[in-house]
Image 1 (cartoon, chains in turn blue, cyan):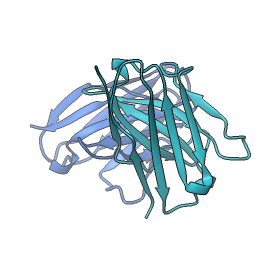
Image 2 (cartoon, helix red, strand yellow):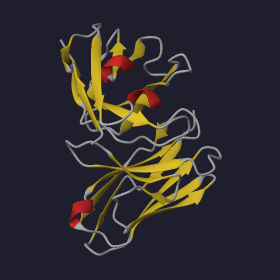
Image 3 (cartoon, chains in turn green, orange):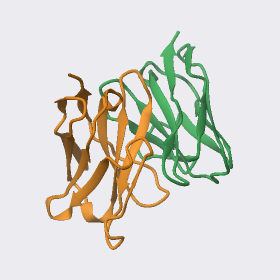
Image 4 (cartoon, chains in turn brown, green):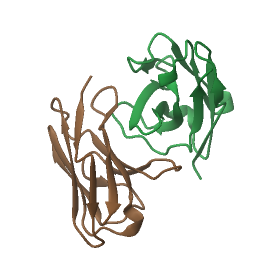
Length: 106
Length: 121
């Protein structure tokens, strides 16, 4: 299985801050990388697919980049409603998720 | 509106069996793969398994942690997908999500709200 190493495990940032979450695959997955947002008690939500394509309806402050083994999710200006856990997921082979990043407001 | 609604969760004894259902609506169900993903308390998301669409003969894949004791099936006439898991352990306690996938190598979207399964005596 392809392993996904996501960092940091958690972060605390101020409203308006730029937030970056990274994900590293254990092998080349080209651009088969997706990002999800998960709030407690809710269904996870697809944010970014194919490494950099913004899902319809997702605010433009979210962006994704990377290819091969290294990927990044960026929130350009953190808002209170962005408090959630974020997960990367590779779809190059049998799906696997990163460990998740919990984002909080400082 | 695309909707996925899971049911069948609850308290199950160790060694027992769970059977979850997921009812889909708002899209052409038979045209999609369907996956199950779970989240144990305080843990991250874990992919459980997948059932492909015809004409791939409803082929399935499973995570190593559930392989051999899990079966995913689908009934396209009822727009439903099912997860049966046997020999349940405490570590199978989780919220189980039903998720749609366009096909091989694709993203997972949308997700159901999930159903909680608790394995305990």
